[in-house]
Amino acid sequence: MARWDADIVIVGAGAAGLMAGIWAGRTAPRTRIVALDGAQRLGAKILVAGGGRCNVTHERVTATDFAGSPPEAIRRVLRRFDVAAVVAFFEALGVRLKREASGKLFPATDQARTIRDALLKAAADAGVDCSHPRRVEAIRRADDGFLVCGNWGALTARHVILATGGKSLPKSGSDGHGYRLAAALGHTVTSTFPALVPLVLPPDHPLCALGGITTPATLRVRSGPGKTLASATGSLLCTHFGLSGPVALDMSRHWLAARLADPAAHLVINWLPALPDADVEQSLQTLGRSTVLRFLSERLPERLARSLLLLAEVMPTRTGAQLTRAERRALVSVLTQWVAPVIGDRGFTYAETTAGGVPLRELDLARMASRRCPGLYLCGEICDVDGRIGGFNFQWAWSSGYVAGVAAAQAVLADTAHGSSNNS
Image (cartoon, rainbow, N blue to C red; front, side, top):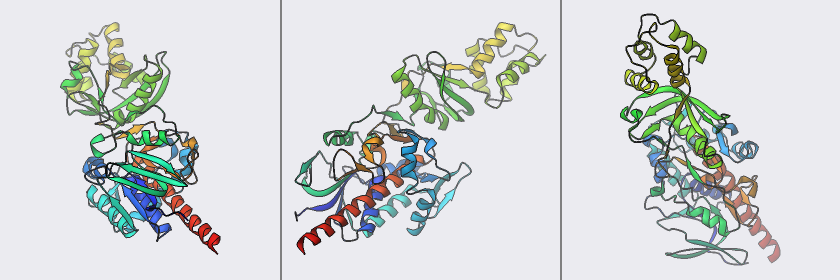
């Protein structure tokens, strides 16, 4: 039987890679597992997640919380290592998770380092040799295995798990090189673009002067002809560059995807999501002597109310009785169907995850194993799966990493058994 430097080489030691290594080591305890990562500091993306607290997962995760690959394909992987399994896994490592009102689960310590350190210790306990900085520049087939190369040298491996991440937060080490590695081994890569990324308005736009203001809002992505493609309601944050906050981040991937297919696609904002459009119209008709500014200030931050009146070209001191029909219609339009003049996004540097990647149809989802390259497994952000804000992308990392790690270890055990039977 051929000698290998490692039974399994994991390329990338982030959330998915560490999970894959832990479960590979637990499944086959004497397996030689090496995790290679190009970053100076392991788990950099874990440490900055959730504002430094690490939103580990969400209390309720379904395939509809994700985009990219088909929901049924995503569901097949998620159910192999679900939320309950994640909670139990971290509790066994001594990490208690707490649930917040939003349904998000964080470490009770409120420190992302708690998660990172627990994963590194679990990986070491499972026999994983985490080596960094060791950037992998190329992977080539060699005999029945792989040659994994970098400027540090080369390793031979029987199996390889790609857990390189996508393109988001490139300073953490995920600069998209993993896609090139996957393509060189026979995979296709769908169009990649930022997801969970803030959106940019023209620099002189009135909303850019409202930095720090938050309000509930409904955002809709519509095609050029006006068909609603996606919508969500949540907290919207005005910033010095444009729009952020959970609802803007969630809608960003849908706006970007729509624009790729239809340059006329646009983002529409309803600033009064709790009121039906007809109620807004009726309320303005019955204001009487009360001013439109007072009406809006009871429902929105006053600075935002003034800016929306400016956009509608209605004087703040106008009373309901003074409003013309044209002014009322203009104000209702701005309040409930304002087309945001989004000119772009803040890019991968500020994106929390990547949309696009290797399609799940190219994988045997029972093992996260490549259908194109025997012995290769893929997990985490490199796959064409991206979740909404709230811990869903970490859940994908835990689930897919678990499946890939267990499957790769089982393959090693099968190799060993096959070799033993041939020698007997």
